[in-house]
Length: 524
Image (cartoon, rainbow, N blue to C red):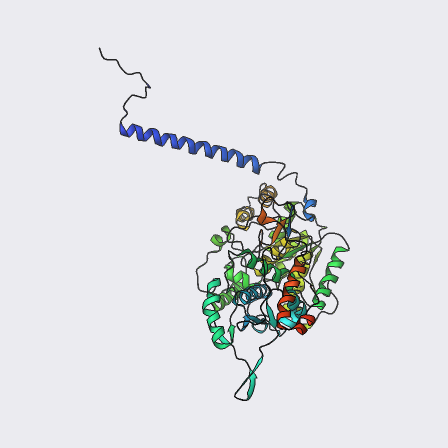
């Protein structure tokens, strides 16, 4: 008599359909378990009284935890000085606002370095955007800029004169429109060939014309040396900024807010439904004249976090986080669109509001409303105890400041997650405001970084977060994270002097002074 196989025996031959079902059920079970674990963890995290209810908001007035890191943009490998003879002259015209121009200047220095070119002092397209004629010398300390970068590139204030057929005239630069986000190879091939052919090239416009992601840490550190060391504002701008900071800090801590609620940004974002019909016509007209035609639906834009926060929403966020009405706030912004009716709710929540006109010196220069005014706002926001950008993209002002504050000792930055906050505010507007402040707190305290070192993830810009390239660890586990030697400036100076000595002993003697701006603790 044949032996009947036992139920459950591995020798039972299953129908193919049953076997497939078994496999699918097994996978489904695993997925379900993972989901349950994730849900439990998520609930436990978001409902944690430690993370939300018991957070001491006073700690945000201090700098963020550095994790043992400090800023350092000095070279960490062999970095030869610029040769006595270069391949030609590089001239650029930086367009856009103050911080878009600032990024362009950093890119111009990198381009000059890889092309072995002499950089002509960058031009700022101030007239079309700001309607002033300040230019680079009117905003930045030219002497400091040249001295700080003397180990990296050669810089001249203008193109030289050349003699041809007995006539002397200024060298003419060959004009080129560079591609957007051009790779390094474009500069070392096409642009360099034109430079050697004509003696000088003129790149215009020069905004976002060099790729941000460069797989060469030393070139990224060069960007940081330009941005955080060489680009120092003129003494009068630094003096005004210092006076404002001292007045604000004489009463204790203060925060700065970049309130991006101006006509250009609102029109760009397509967030117009909250305005009157007359105001909407103005925004629509501005958009048609300045931006590509695109159908934008307000509710959809808001739900994906594309609408700038209103002043009232900023005030509600601060109150929900635990800041009281005694908080001193410095506002950096252009002319707010929609009039004072948008500021009244904010002022009712936080009456101690200042700007560079109300707290600054009685007589600001005429161009203080242009580039100089933006420069003052930049410095006050840089030095404030807390900085809050209400719209970090696209906003070169906010993005660059976040990067500078990170470099400047991990100073606290609070970045509202507009996408996560949108449904909370929309529920409130529809009369469903239960647990409003609790929901806002959960969003605002969900990351916990607030200016500390963190990995750069797209679309975050290098200018917003230069970690880890422009930072080092005092007690590094990995060799690549080690800080450069303390005598790095002396080493660079020695190499530069050797190079110049080969060219001329007189030039070497004339350039042997000043190492200003490159030391790791010289941030501004």
